[in-house]
Amino acid sequence: MRILAVDHGEKRIGLAISDSTGTIANPLKVIQHVSRVIDAAQVAGIAGENQVELIVIGQSFDEEGQPNLAGRRAARFGEALKTQTQIPILMWDESFSTQSARAARLEMGVSRKKRAGHLDELAATIILQSYLETKIVNRKS
Image (cartoon, rainbow, N blue to C red; front, side):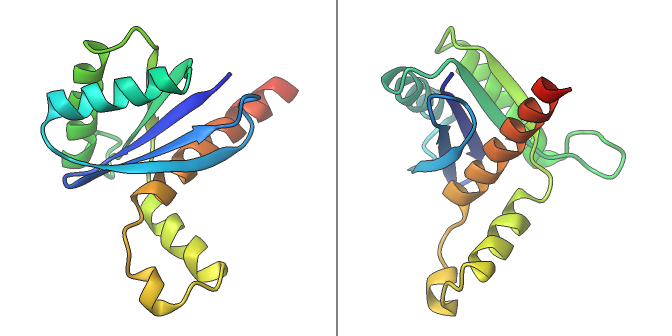
């Protein structure tokens, strides 16, 4: 089962895709934000091209467990995406995915100059791997 993850941002949207077994997340691409409808159409097209069976959208929350501003934007994007595709869409807690992406770059020894780039694709990969690991643990239980 191939799964697409979306790290929805104000300027860019990071995408990651799983392998066909649904166990390993890989960065796919970054698309530039245009408008909610156009972004949703692009993501729906990419999902279709890659024969995706589930789309996971990262959503962030505040300290009370409610979607924060970015989380509400992600939810609105998810609603727009639902009008563009029949593929099931799942909102997933993305808390700290960008910080994890930064830490991963440090651990990989990426130079300071190269670390200055965008983290959208890597953040989407972290969101997807988090989802996949939860599913693997549940299968073993």
